[in-house]
Amino acid sequence: MKDPHFRGAGEAIYQEGVLYQKAAAEFASPQYYRTAERRFRLLVKDYPGNPRCRDALLRLGEIYTLHLNDETAAEETWKLLAKAYRYSAAALERIRKELASHRSPAEGGSLVRNIRFWTTAEYTRVSIDMDAEAQYEKGRLSNPDRIYFDISKAKLNSDLVNRVFDISNGLLKQVRVGQYKPDVVRVVLDLSGESASTVDELRDPFRIIVDLRPVSRSAAKTIPKPPATVIPPPLPKAAAPTSQGDRTLTRTLGLKIGAIVLDPGHGGRDLGTIGPGGLAEKDLVLSLALSLKKMIEGQIGAEVILTRTDDTFISLEERTAIANRHKADLFISIHANSSRNRSVSGVETYYLDFARNDADREIAARENATTTSNISDLEDLIKGIARADKSAESRELASIIQNSLYAGARKLFRSTQNRGVRSAPFIVLIGANMPSVLAEVAFISNPGDERLLTKAPNREQLAKALFSGIEAYMKTLGGNVVHNRTDNKSEQ
Image 1 (cartoon, rainbow, N blue to C red):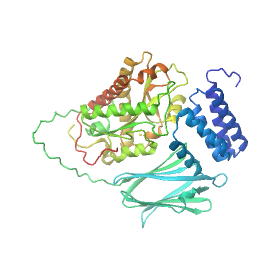
Image 2 (image 1 turned 180 degrees about the vertical axis):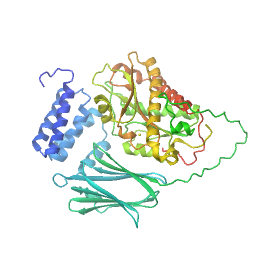
Image 3 (image 1 turned 90 degrees about the vertical axis):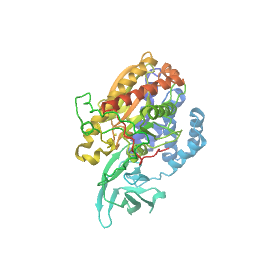
Image 4 (image 1 turned 60 degrees about the horizontal axis):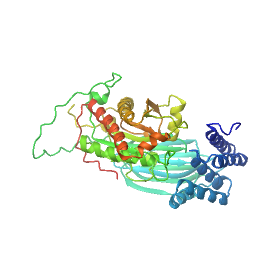
């Protein structure tokens, strides 16, 4: 670093450390780990106010624990993390246990760290968590019906050896895990009914994601009892085309909104971004989601499910699973943005697609007229084109929310910019069965914007802007709300 006073010096030092850490893992080089350690320590020592310092400390703790076997240095790092960023003893202990569970696999191989699952009668997701990317074979066998994965050059976390996860619910009986061969891990999903499966891969860290859905779903609906006082329903309106002129299948079939999942990002040990004055993204977006829930339920009448209602850590995969489990019709993930340039101010809204530029990829790395059918039923109605339809509706939802969000933000923030609708492969949107977007409501790295967002009335105004966008989108579908969703209950 030729100029230590260069505005981006801290970020450059951090990225250099990350590169050396990745190179150390790739080439099994202790020397590279030592170089990464020096870069992260330099950042923490010479640039203590840099927003990357927290991540640097977490990476230092990982390097000391897993690669340099220096427990003394690791403990000093955890103490500094607790003091500087208010990590609780419980949060630090959780980090220690997670790192301790990583035992080294065979040379050049990977470690199967954990098996996680979320399941109901009509949807199941299984995540095979690993510490590095791996090659695997998959197949489906009958008598009994099961799906298997043979993961090459892999070892099992000691806690998983010969484990059987007894589920006995929905589509999945159990998950069995074993060291099939000295360098092959086998994971078997024993199924309990006819189902269709999809397999995806997520990275950083590497995970194999298996989604199961029933082959067919009963179309029977519970006929609601007529109310004591019969109020004539509003006349149904035909759905308008999207702003692109598309008449999607959702609009052609007249599908409506019955349930909305709001996802306040981050939570628990995952603070999200932190403003220069100390405002944590996780706290801001939870406040917005709670206000938005009240508005939707009180003024529109749709059912609202929150992925979290308090300061709880929820994994990205679980957030999507919650939306699918409740057969939601919209999924809206709420976040706040950050920039190394503290003067940046603005709002942007994302839908799931490949990122179109480096900036979008960077953000994605830090963070899917009278009918009583719902949008969540779409895959059962016309499975062949459901994915394209969902993408078109997600883009439309993002466009409408973005316009409303900008209109509200410009009343609060003097220099706010309309940063537009963007696409990126956000993990939290992957696998969602309904139109889904991620809204970046503000840059809390901007000191002025951060100060305004510490005040409750300003947060309420931002929540109203989100509400107006959701309401406007629903009106393009005809405006009616489906109320006969007795199968869905609040998540929390």
